[in-house]
Image (cartoon, rainbow, N blue to C red; front, top):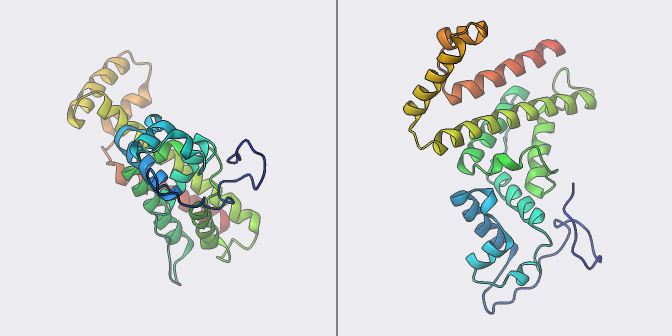
Length: 245
């Protein structure tokens, strides 16, 4: 769902199309940049649920109604916040990168951005992100595929990009959810893992989950980096095998 325009109904409907309102320094200077930066500080400290127009206004020592000069809804603010994080993700550059290298670079950098701003994971895969930085990120992922052997058809480019994007979003959201779960218990990582293993051992003791029992007993304990990278490589290998390269 695209960002909506204000109640007046005049002018373009997307926040990206609306010009920055003129600065009014009294009682405090505002800009979309300052509003978004304040919202990000709140979200980094207390999570996305803590972000509101009123709280951002208080952070900037401004009246809430002034905020609506710069954006129409909280959803627009979230769009702007997400695009600001996309702007922190360096895009792969330079000739000679193959499609796997370029997409791996984008995936790893996107994951690092989400680890810096955990709330970013909550916005991935939701509303269409149409800001300039998000579109540049999309363009880079499409360009990494276009023209590579096996990717002559634009539909193949789009489908592969969508598959990789779905993996990256799912893996990031799962990792952030696990990090939050560990933190919310009040236990450190080792204590949380011990409590979890005791519970799982009780569950599988009845014999109803033989494959789960095998995983608990025999599977290696991969860290988050290895888990993310290995899954990505499995996906890349499958794509290459299907396309014959």
